[in-house]
Each structure stands twice: as C-alpha cells, then as structure tokens.
Length: 212
Image (cartoon, rainbow, N blue to C red; front, side, top):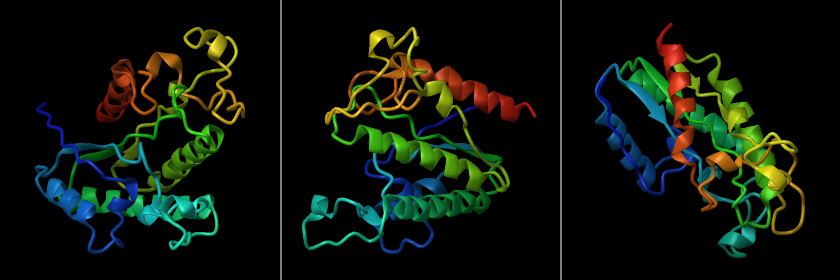
C-alpha cells in the first residue's frame, strides 16, 4: 500500500468545522484534502497543540488582550463546540471522495515534560476531548478514532518506565492524577511531541480495522 503525508503548520481541530468561513488555515486544509486520491485510507492528526474553537480561550481572555472577551462561558462549552465542528468536518472529508476510512488520532496525554502552570487542567480537558470524540465518531460511517489513549498514559505508582516520577507535578505544585500524564517511554522531553516508539499502537489499531 502506498502512503503519503501532508503536514500543515497552524492547523487546529477547529479548522475542520464546516461552519468556519474565510479562514486561511481551513482553506489550506481543504486544498490538501482535495489532493488525496479517492477511496484512500486517511489518518487525521489535529488538536495536539490547540483545541480551542475560533482561537478564543474561554477562561483566559488575557492571553489575547483585555479587549477580546471569551466566546464561551466555560472550557467545557468551548470543547463541545470544537469537537462537534471537528467531527462534522471529518465526516465531510470522508464523504467528499468516498474514502475507504478516515482514522482519527487521539490527542496524546499531557507530557511529563510539559512546563505550563495548568497541567492538571489540561489533562482533564484532553481526557474529556478524547472521550467526547469517541462518542461522536461512533455512529459515523467509516470514520473511527484510533483508540489507544489509555495505553499512552502512565499507570501511576509502579509504572516501570516512569519510576519515582510516576506522580508528575505541574509548575504550580498540583499533582496530576495517576493515569493522566504521558508515560515516560513515549515522551521525548520537549513538552509536546511523542516518541516514535508509540507508532506500533497506531499500526495495531489500523490493522485491526482494515482486516475486518
């Protein structure tokens, strides 16, 4: 099977939403999508850096300056709007060229090397995002989550890879719950990316579906 990869800098999950108009990143994404041959097997990875809908932080408007008020009342409300738009865009992607499958990469757990002050909050939102994504993708035809999020997580006390660092602590001293941080064996220590040794998890999930 031939394969090809397309990377787009600045692409976020919310750029997939069909409701988003006159947006540069979405227009670039659509051009890339149009270049994919019909009846392909597509793997989408978006949302690793930023899950925010429309570039607005619901709880931290100061990130964009005091003149820009938050669009949503809570992070959960923003997450719901984003994941619904993301799933609508994924369904549109699959049907546009009758692709055999569109597989969706989960958002990885918060890395142990993450240096932000809100690690515990991020961990909760990442888990909720993946759970809601799975719910919304479940009834869709040939659009499926590569569901290996739990296997990326540190198991907590007794985790051989993480050792004494199993109880990760974020920058404000709040302990991130067991099972919420990225396991050390998948962390390349840059606070963002996954070690390539997680790729067998992707391979196993893909093959388990494609064999059916």
